Length: 167
Image: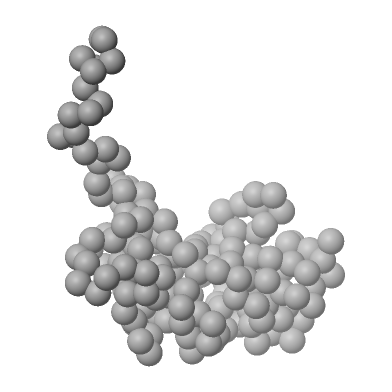
């Protein structure tokens, strides 16, 4: 167990940023909060720079896609306070037509490749990123593979027709 509890962590964030985030829950003890793109940089900076919290380790930045939802694209940040042995997850949801969010490379240098990967797979544009370009796929690719925009199987495949299996 960590040196600080999720309740203490939540109170500290709430004192600094009242009404600028909502608590999603604590699945498996992992405090999860949601905020907006306007507040994410300030909250991340506070979590890293605070003398008590010390969330100095950015574990991951990734994305999620909920097709058909009002806010389809989500950017997820996982932070770890090594001193307190506590973790937190922050979520920011964006509309599909406006997938811009400020970069976290101004806070953690290690965010560089994580943001490039999230851009490459989900199409999230990190404003202010020093080198935002594809990292896993070819440069001229126009789609984003982790978005759920394509059917799971090719409807034109003939090798899966029922008559091949005696049906």
